[in-house]
Length: 150
Image (cartoon, rainbow, N blue to C red; front, side, top):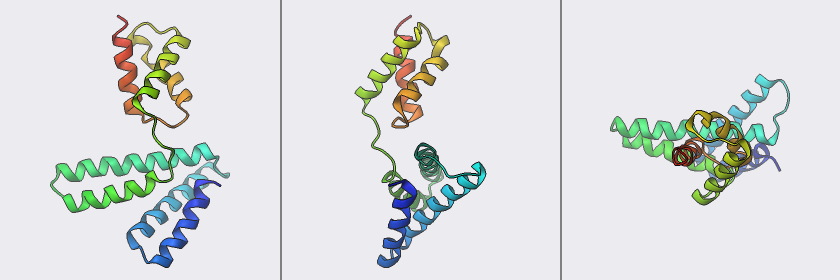
């Protein structure tokens, strides 16, 4: 079952439960998926759906930070609640240990020896992670490993 199907089912449940906050988030996710499909001109693959959901999660997380910096805690809490709803449709993030293993394999496969090859390592590691890794976390691990190889 695709993420879109899960979201559609959960939207109906949220309507029945009269859960306005969750319903609004689910409708927003559904609209984002539909817009991406329209832009592409054909149905999205499961990986493309996950990409849309990851972008939505990243937007929510960035909004939480911005609202907290501006002292708008109520708005930050609302965005954090939306982020939690989005997270339910994404695969569980990889652990730090798993990220380290992926980066180590990517470095080995690409033959990278310095920070100059960070882009190559990140490209390979991102492909190997298959969407289960946050780019910032993956980048931090890759940077740490490559700087340690001096």
